[in-house]
Length: 137
Image 1: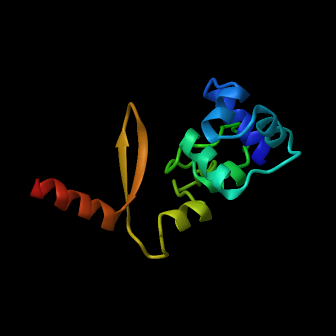
Image 2: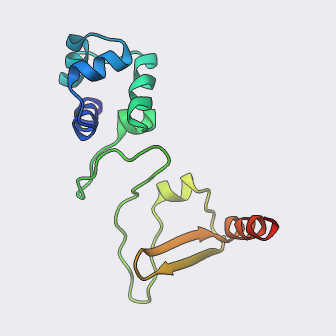
């Protein structure tokens, strides 16, 4: 996964192996070995690569393209997968999304919509905090 993500991110950012190698302080040959899977970077170089591409180290190393074929998302952005809407309009929020956003059974969620942008779901407690901040400014 790592070497596929590295190649994908480098190409997506329009960088040559030489340019990326220079940014993280390794030779082009070393970077080539990272991309072929012959070698793995140490933790410091992995951090540098993640910073160059503005992705998390976890996503750089572990991200797997799903059927959507999407590349590694920018740091703080997530694609949790596809959910199916049930007969009564219900959806199941993926476990990883519940973990990242600390959604527990019994929590209230607010569904927002914009016909041009789509639907957003926000935890009620976060929404109320945001409304307080807006009111106080």
